[in-house]
Length: 213
Image (cartoon, rainbow, N blue to C red; front, side, top):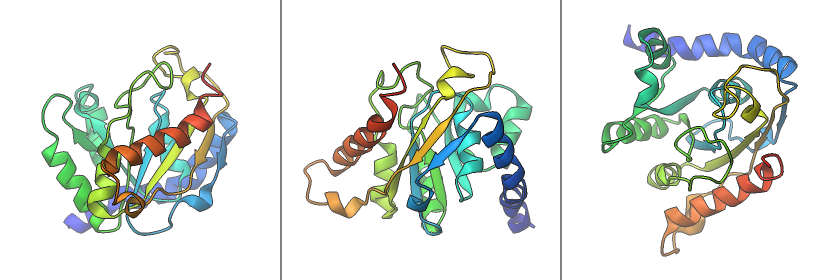
């Protein structure tokens, strides 16, 4: 029975992916680039910039993997219904103020069995790209598990359900899935995790800075 319960969100997402993808691509005039860069199987850490509440669902239905997300525990406190949905779809709660030991262990366990994990290194929705330095968790997880770190850039969502645009509105959205960053290319660096995040930032910045003026 536990295995059936664990499989339920994956099955539901698989069934709903095509209709949800059609809706999001039509409503948001969505364009996805670089789908071939996402490994089809095996562990992968996906790290994206974060403007809007729309970012997780739009990314989830338009990438061809079942994704678990890391989310701050604040989201789980918003309502019981919302917290239940987050838990059902496998979202991992991250303690904002304490040490995220449990969240990191759960994330590593998910990656070690070949799962895909998505997180937002800025740590929150931002009004403008670059206002917060990226946190190091994405690179640390890739380093600890040997998973590739795949940068994802998303633009357009800053105009809907974002800090500066709280209303839900139609907006053109673009997603770029960039080439994986592999941990072993940094094993001789003095600060390999920092170097990986510097390269993640540079790749995403190359896409986002032109759209976030």
